[in-house]
Amino acid sequence: MRTVALFGNPLRRRHSPVMHNAAFEAAGVDIRYELREVDEAGLAEQVTEARRDRWTGF
Image (cartoon, rainbow, N blue to C red):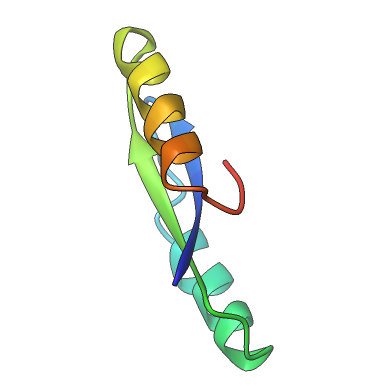
C-alpha cells in the first residue's frame, strides 16, 4: 500500500482521511491518506521518511 499524507500543525481536517480513503477504495487504488501533525522542527525528518519510503505524495 502506498501513502499520501498532509503535513501540518495543527491539523483540524479530521474528515479528510475518511473521505480520501473512501475515494481511493472506490477507485480500486491501493493508497492510504493520512494526516501527519508535524511542527517545523520535524518537517525535514518527515520529508526524508516520505522520500525514503517512496510515498505517492505529501
